[in-house]
Image (cartoon, rainbow, N blue to C red; front, side):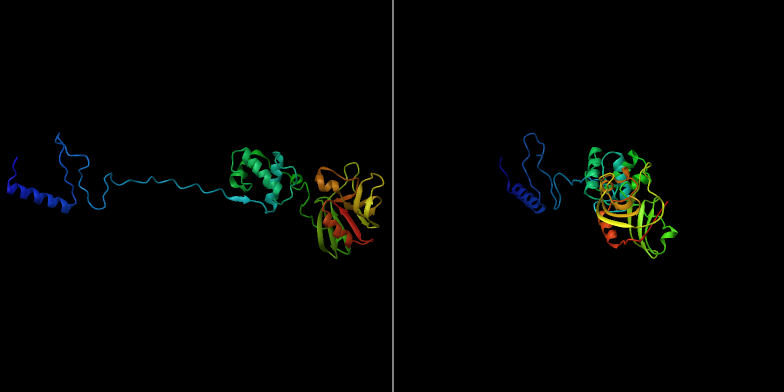
Length: 272
């Protein structure tokens, strides 16, 4: 087919216009439908159209940490007492969040499908509360550390070993001022510790009981065979045991300092 000069000029003008507009002119296929790739594109547009990014829901905040290794206080003491109730801790309570406490918390968390962080967060604490009961005073202070009771009035003058059976504590007092406080344990039901006002009449650094053949280091005797002394059993078992009438101290460092300060003749007051 011959193309006239006028028709050729028209076609050339159309091609030039398409080039200026950014269009691509493709020949139509034999079936007369336009090719799928023949689209008018404008600057900044995409063939497939804009895509939307699905918004992710905000992450839930991490549970608040209540206690972790290095912490101390009454809250840690209760945590340890409750861990003892469910068999995850056997020592203490001491009131100090140590490596044993951290290990016990990790075990408890792992058993219940919680992250094994070793830190007691709000989720871990709620789960432990649901499985245990409020610990009694005896449980909280199984290994000592309880607050000392107010001193007996007989302790307010002179140099005194002021001992309270109620709070299970010993105050070392001079002229009404408390210089140190430590946890103590007493005799059992069948061998009770005597109460009253006494005096230290003998000190024996490496004493061994002649009746029970047990060591009584840092012994300060105040009534017959009864003495204030360090107890290995108290240090190991706490209040699960008892003495044969003596006043046991579980902190060896504390009683070593006390032994160095107490003199023969100093007063001993034991009261409820």
